[in-house]
Length: 450
Ligand SMILES: O=C(O)C(=O)C[C@@H](O)[C@H](O)[C@H](O)COP(=O)(O)O
Image (cartoon, rainbow, N blue to C red; front, side, top):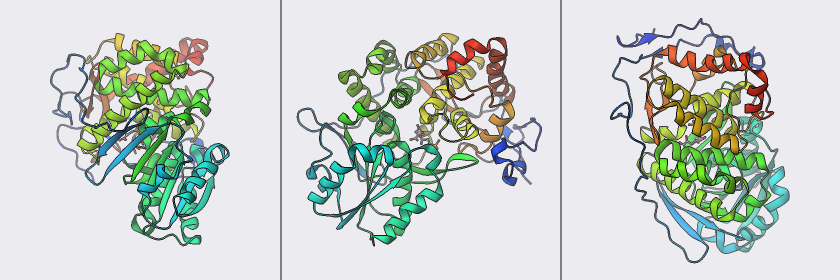
């Protein structure tokens, strides 16, 4: 039996929680132990806060170093387990020299999806072959719903079939799903083979390809099965963004804006001022956004590779967002879309805690709305659904729920220092908004499944 610390209040929502319909067979949910809440009075901020009404953050000093001539740019990620480059260039996917420095053995397996294969697979396989390795290919279906153990096993089958060995390289050519599942397959195959990230979505460039979080989803929770496993290189060919559809572009913009919200308010203000350029794919604006985002990510990963502290702030909005993704069925909402709505919810909760003014939430909502991102959770995800998925969030420790909230504009904090009522009220706020004005609410969800 779990004995909670004395200052921790027990979670009071009725248990056992009911699973959403598509998980009705899952006994694991119905036997879930209660979450614990520390409550607002306890000493609980995991990353210490200075004062409740802290000032907006100034731009942090970033350590990622940039090298490379001309239009090309190389940043470095100094993770504790591996140092590796993020290469920015254009029109480089067909060039053997793009990959050659990072290939170790005599074989490479390119993992991609059906959409990306049609666009870029030929040039990547040609470049790898010209770099001197035997090249094999595994093409997965496109979508978050395929980021599962079943599809990771297909990658391992391919590794076995083609007799890959410890020096062989896996190449993840695609967006976040392909990067995460391939990285996970690389981490586990013969206990670890080298892999190269070749992100083809904005979200993968600015977020998932950097930092070594690899994983597959479990029906009960997003990214629940995975490993911290850094790539040997991240190759960003900025030309690939030209083929990205508008929805995918917006999903990436959500993660770009996140860096401003969590640690660099000046960058948020730059995003506010330049959101129309980003949406219009202005090359200079996109490049600036990508480089700034990767610098932030590299900086955080260098400080805290395995998320024992500051790295958790990258999870702003993810507790709510992951609940939306899992509850709606993986793939119904894109990750970036769910996280955008989740970030709005986290801001709203921070307002209710009295830590930031409502003006901050409104500004975040305006930027997301201009990028055609949802700023409301779907009404079909009930309070109980939210709590069911939140109960398996990776930031829950010893049964205590911890969230990323804002203590100031540009200053995120990992904290258990909130009463459960504020969390419930925040979630219920959206249900009340929906009831009061379904039409307006639907507009704020932009036609996504409800
Ligand atoms: O790199 C990180 O750390 C992040 O949390 C970045 C997130 O934006 C990303 O979605 C990540 O995959 C989420 O990780 P998880 O641990 O919440 O599953």
